Length: 306
Image 1 (cartoon, rainbow, N blue to C red):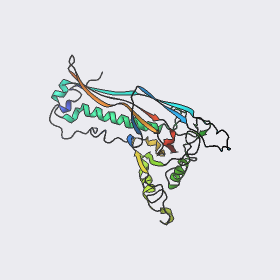
Image 2: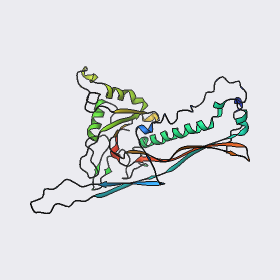
Image 3: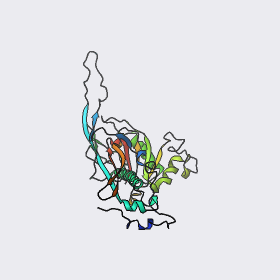
Image 4: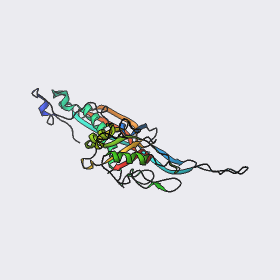
């Protein structure tokens, strides 16, 4: 078991350093990205289940004096969320604490808290990175971005682009159109709205120009940019995620206004503790949280590219 001793931090034992170049330790929580594209909820138990239910269908014409058609509701898949515990410790010999001349050198509690929030952002980002990975499926047995999402009454529907596209006005128009025709659980066309574009940091400027420009530049600024600030689909927020894998710079998707889409569920939020091992005279610092993530309804997502 590694213990930080004076030999580990020997350069901090004398007041001779000018600057300490190290990881940032502050503002971990304030810098979280995942709450911008995932719905945060609290868990009341070790695990929770979301159940898909399809409602009634269209009304049928009834002849005078005849009995009305009897409809029903239909259960679909269930999505189970199981809480996971994430934790990390840092053990520091009391001599290293007593002799160190610089609080920033060890800064155990702050470092651990920063690591906890970083872990949450990386963990949430993996949901998007794995959106087409067959090892990570949702309650309906398919990946997040799929053309084979199931319907309780039979049949399938798609939340992926008909043809994957790189960022462009045409790609966003295609996304808005397809999302606007998503079916609800009963299989009837419901339609949803694009709220946010989720993308790697490398794409932020392209998407900002597409969603914030009033006119279409390729038309000599004569045509209205229908996905811009004066179009009927204005107000789309761009959420760049700097944790998306560098090799996945073509990946992007949309968050819709469908309920129960991408989820982050807290069983217990980030907690830090400090205690002493008196036998070894070692200060122990710990941080942990209990949470899980995923999605209940894939209608909350649109896969534009991989």
